[in-house]
Image (cartoon, rainbow, N blue to C red; front, side, top):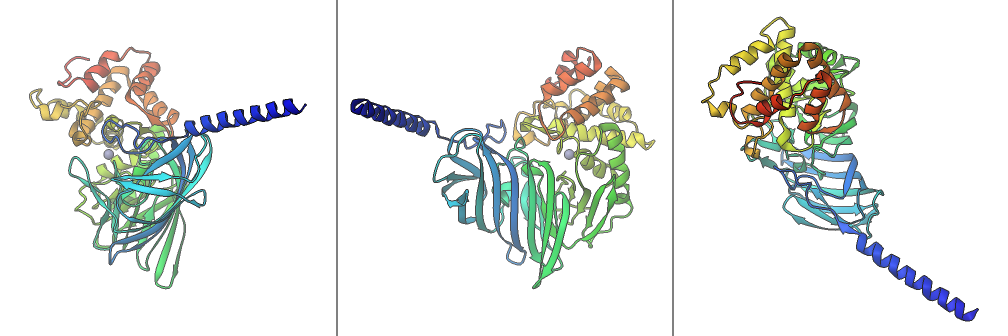
Length: 458
Ligand SMILES: [Zn+2]
C-alpha cells in the first residue's frame, strides 16, 4: 500500500507538472494587429470587446482630456499578453480584472501583461486611467481625424484610425461593441455621443453628459463631439431624434428632411437599424468632411440635402453592415452614393440612371476617374478616392439595370437585413446578388469592381 501511495503521488505530481507545463506553454501573446491590408496594426488579436465604458472629463481651455476606459472583452485564445490601440497620453492606472497589470508602449500599441494568463473564452475587464492632450491623426490621404479642437470644443471623428486618439480601443471595424459615455465639460457646452441621451447633470460649473449606445458599433464610428450646440430632441421613425446645431450656423430648412430621409431608406433597405437618429452640425471647416458617426452623423458645416441623405444611408451601409477590411470601402461609399441618387429619384428629381449616364460619359482616357477600380483601391491613399464613390455607385445602378428593379431592391434589402450589425466582404455581396437575381454575375462584377478600365460591356 505504501509503495502504491508513493507511486500514485509521483504520478499525480508528474501529471500536475505536465498540465502546468502545457498550460503555461499554451498562453501566448495576442497579435499587435489584425492584418488589415491598409492598416495592419489597427485592432489586436486574442480577444473581442463587448463593451466600452468611457468616463471622461475635457477641459477645452488647455485641450486636456482625462478619463478612465473600462473595457469588457472575451479572450479568443489563451492570452499571456494583449494590445490595445492608444495614441498618446500618460497612463496612471491599468488594471486587468481589478489587479494592476504591467504595460509598455510602442507607437499606437499599448501592450498589456496581466498578472496571470487569461483562458480562451473567459471574459475579462481592463481599466485604463489616462490623461493628456488628445491627438489629431493625419491619414495617408492627408485628411485629419481623431480629437480635433474647434473654437468651442472638439470635433471627434475616427474613420479609419482616429478613435485611439481619445480612448484605448480594439480599433478594427470587425470588433463591434456597445458603449456607455460619460463626459464632463464646462457648463454651457454640450457633448454629443452615440446612442440615446441618458442624462445631463450640471454641478459646480460642469455638466456631465451621459449617452448609451445599445447596438454594436465599430470604434471608428464613435464620437463625443462637443461645443456650444442648440440641441433639439424629438422623435423620428419611432426612435429619439437628436439634432445639434452650432448656434453660429444657420441651417435653413435642410434638417427638416431628416425624418423623411430615414423613412424612405427604411422603406427600401429595411427597418432603421439603431435606437436613435440625429445629426451634429458643427463649425469645423478645417476638418473638410462629414462622417457617418453611428446614430448621428457629424458635419463640419451645414450639409446640403444630398450630403445629409448620404450620411443617413450609411446607417444601413457602413454602420450596421460594415466592411471587414478597409479595401472594401466601396461597400460603404458606393452604396451611400447610390443612395443619394435614389433619394433624388424618389423626390421626382434627377434619376439614378441619369446620374449614371452623366458619369458614364466620362471618357475612357480619364484614368483618374475610372482607376483604381472600386473593389481594388490598392493603397490607403485612395481609400476615399472618387472611384469608391462614383464608380461604386455606378456599379449598383448598372446592377439595377441588369437584374431589374424587383431583384435589385430585393438584393439591397437582403444585404442590409441579413447582415445587420455584421461584418462583410465584397464576394458575399456578389453571391447574394447572384442568389437573389438567379443570374450569373461573375463577369458583370469583374468588369465593374475589379478591372481598371472603363467598363464597356457587362
Ligand atoms: Zn460616405
